Image 1 (cartoon, rainbow, N blue to C red):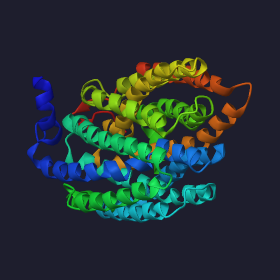
Image 2 (cartoon, rainbow, N blue to C red):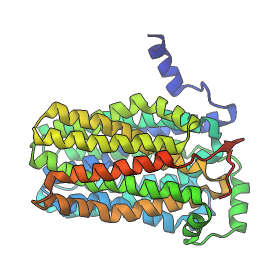
Image 3 (cartoon, rainbow, N blue to C red):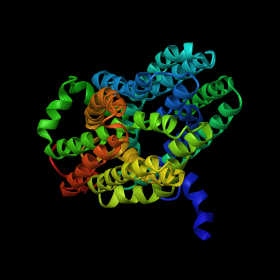
Length: 428
């Protein structure tokens, strides 16, 4: 009981946060609360479910909603050198305000099949801007938060964002089951929250930003620098290789799983949002403090091994759940998905900070985004195509699980980067 009473002050208070990092933490938490509503309803799972059930979109359009993230990552990585030499906060604020305008545009669409292509087209812009925002945020976290508490701080932010996003998506699902035009209210509220989030994050000041910008301007970086980096930093290249393999299997199956739940089990919005969002988020939230400490203590490689194994096991359980039409077994699979998502979120947003120094953060994040973009550009379409083949169908889950177990073994056998005085000791 005492732990539960202490959870609120730990989550929203300054316990364990260095004094100099507290202003950033305060403004970012306020921003994250609004972001959970605004950006939460733009999550791929919810957008794919809305496109499939309400707009009656074809399978390739459902896959396209996931592939849009690829274009965003490639966009952010290619323009990384340009953004690298400029202040971060204005791009975050401007990006979120533009996303708010896009959400208002979605609210005006009628809930008919004719809206499916405009809906997918409008969501391309948030995907592009989201990648730029993530890149800028990773640099701010590296500058404003010490490495020894970075994982725990990110875990707090993750808990707040995901809990609010899950509640928002669940309420949106109930509304869509009851009212065909509910998306107008949903996306209008989301737009207002995106504006509030932008105003809150605008108050953040990046520590040492002037010095970092001077250093970046003195050392121009080409878009190809990330690939040269992989040749130079073998430890990071090894991490990226296993990350690419594991992430590819996640993306191979995600759009196909949406189709499986609708085609084979006939789920409604309430059931779909419970399985796809609510259960994974609940598990991710419960595991977030543990995963944050794991990141800070045993390192990124062991954390990713746990995540890849969780994803792989979830696919096996889901295969048998769909085959037997057992809803409890399906939900059990998404419990494991939550553990995989929790570790994956940490790895994507701050995993590269175990390999890089502050002035190189965006270059390392850029190559991570480039490789993520390459797999997201192809894997969703490949997964849908394989699922629609009669010879494969739901067996796609078993194929992906086997490959992901290989990635888990690869992470386990890879050396963990050593951190000393907040900086990596290997030469990248």
